[in-house]
Image (cartoon, rainbow, N blue to C red; front, side, top):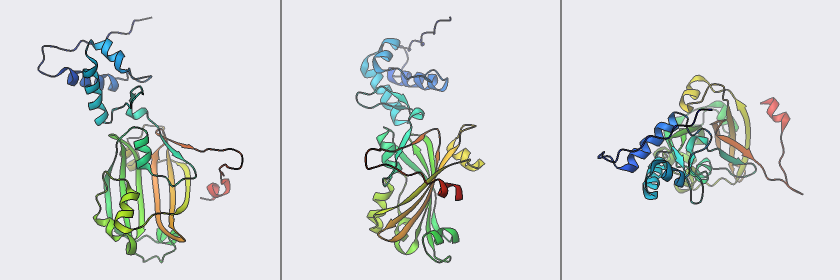
Length: 260
């Protein structure tokens, strides 16, 4: 069996700081697939590269800011694209909060923020087909890695101020409440596996052979439907969880899924 080669030594005569050299070297090794099984811990890197712990921590801090590495207090560093985002069943779910809980920085690229008409969406919101709707489309990122395409519609008469909102780095439902006074009180969701189209696959940088989840949400305030949302999320970065026990549980609505 061939021995695993030692990583190259850092150049101590270079004007580039050691932490910057180490960060570049770890990026190169990550791209080469060296950390497919596990990312080395701080002390492993100290020993491998014969540098101080402060040098390693600064290199990891830069890699965290780039979204390449996730490293929390008391936790071994991991590659950002190996971190799964988990959605609990039976709760009002925020992808922004879930990304933060996974140790990554949530960010959005706004692709559309405009007024549209859509007969099908208006019907889901129990409105007439000619009702103007606020339409938002965002590419959701976890760190610097694309995670989901989020499309949402709201009645213009109650959500017009969303057209002025800066949505790239905020928790959306906080922004919704701040600008419109709306706070969802409930709703329903349906999750199913789908095959993304070519544009969606490109935006999500989805590897060949990997499917996606489509999550359809109808959000209500009291009895009134106010939000129709469809989120397309990478199947290799996303999981669904449920707690169960005596007197509680979750329901799989097979008939509804088959009819959709």
